[in-house]
Length: 261
Length: 254
Image 1 (tube, rainbow over the protein chains, first blue to last red):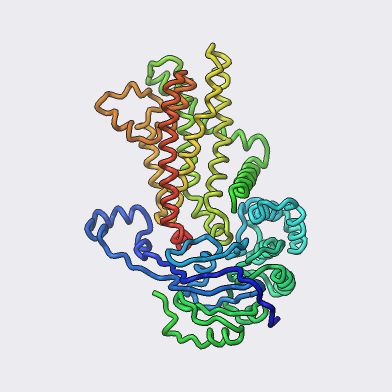
Image 2 (tube, each protein chain N blue to C red; image 1 turned 180 degrees about the vertical axis):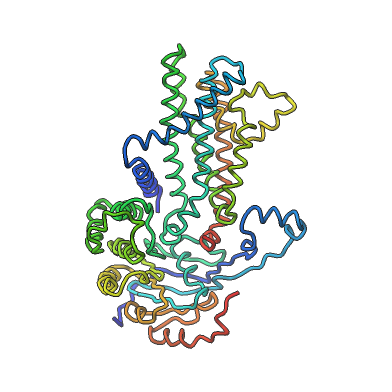
């Protein structure tokens, strides 16, 4: 899967910056706040907050048909970027321009009410993912069929292994195409057999999808799925371009320049 | 995501949690309304027969204060840990977090409604009181519902940063119960302590109930509703403000 005709722009990200104050992490509870205030009120109220930039000026555009692999070491800002594009987080600076419908998945080991059965969880998640879909029942039934869980589907979700949970969730999210699909390290739970089966379904879904953002640490998966690669390092775009070049750029990141505070 | 989609999501979540709780039988439902009814029974015994608070129709007086209070305090305490306990779900998918809380509040609201009516209706059948004023009762639910939801959202966000908030809230509620005119009337409070009641936000959500089912005073009721609504708006703006400030860190820490 190499060359594809790029037509119109579906997403544009311009100089995106997200920062955090690091002071929150010192206190675990109100008891700690109480103790710090009593111990040293001046320091508590006037201390300098250290700022950490998770995204420090990210700019790129995405055209229809692009399947963008995002590579970067832990803490480089991949997930923060995906959450901003998905609309979960808000950048303090910069702009994201898109009219697309966006679906984003960051983890697949999640049921919603663990004491309910797999089928009931699937139905509920289906309604949460696709609230305005008319025939949600047949969509969910099809996903259940695809997940190959057999009679386990009617046992409580909390008894599932991590892999079984991820089978069900992955089957469910790959049911309906959308404009932009964000997949953040989602293939990790499923076993290799299911992964192969799923990969085909994903590829056909991705083909029907406008554009895909695919975060993974596996360069193999990136090669399999993507036709463009972006490497993020320390909250900045380190590389944007062809897949193989991107993987090389990622491999050649200097360890000293990848550290995050 | 628009409002229509979100209300579908809230309703589906509420249905699922009702189903999950009552999945066995009627006994499950009975269990949920048993708590407020027992609480009511014990308090009416203690305050009416042992401490002998002397006001007419004490039971009706108590229903109007105690039941909204139980709804408020249990909902806030059940809702506050939800963002943390459902953290994995919120991190995994793009789901508006407040939907989970709205479903929780709606769930307790249905329980509240059931136990409230169960206690209230016999009184109105037995007493000669006019039923027409009860027509206005649904209005009293509005500030209580919005206020409870907004306070729960605020505390639930803060609970991510300070994990012991619910423990502290349990303590605060046990203090607040005595400082809120629930089992005693406002008129019992000496003038120099009245400020304690005035700064207590909970009373503004409870007052409308008492005014309509006990005092039957439509004029005071409408004033109380306006006050309650204004306060509910203040709390929802606070919730919005906290969310805007904390939403990025919300996902980072969760």
